Figure (cartoon, rainbow, N blue to C red):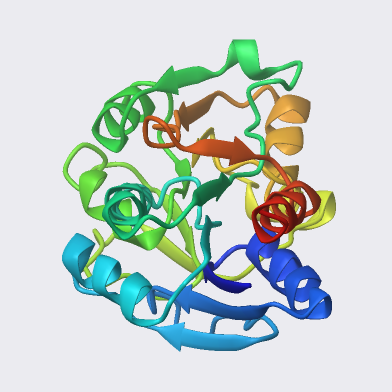
Length: 246
């Protein structure tokens, strides 16, 4: 099988390892937004395809047998492009998306919002020193609503925008332990995050529960209509093997 794996996540790397071991030809595509990405096994390409038309052409020209969209739960554009391209190219598509945090016992106490603009507005009324863990690409949505707050911003790579002078920038990459998050969140009074799911960055939610810190969570948009979803690498591998058996 020639498999295009839209990657960048831990689940994508795990799946690439499984498929390569199965003997599939796997090309993992990374968007190139992280300066030092963790690379999977198999072939890797970095950079966009040129929209839906470019991705459709790539699928046809490279005789791709199946596409697994294992991008971040909030990589909505590439997921939409994959759904739009796979139909015309007659290539089967599945979405590998780890479960979110909505099933946690404390999730009902969080402030759930639909987008980053709403997250910024809600956070502004909940505390004076928010801990922002929303990724660098969304930070511009928080600048004006939280300009007068003493935000602590955690990102992997430095943001491309100027941050207000009262903000503190922290560059680090998970996974994070409880001890690390207790130190990182010291002095902050509201946690702002996305429903990314997984265990690598979940400890901050445990610390918020310990401290009674308000939590603002941006909801996921969900997979594009009509796209099947699996929750882990083993299920995605089974989906690929089922396509290979046809």
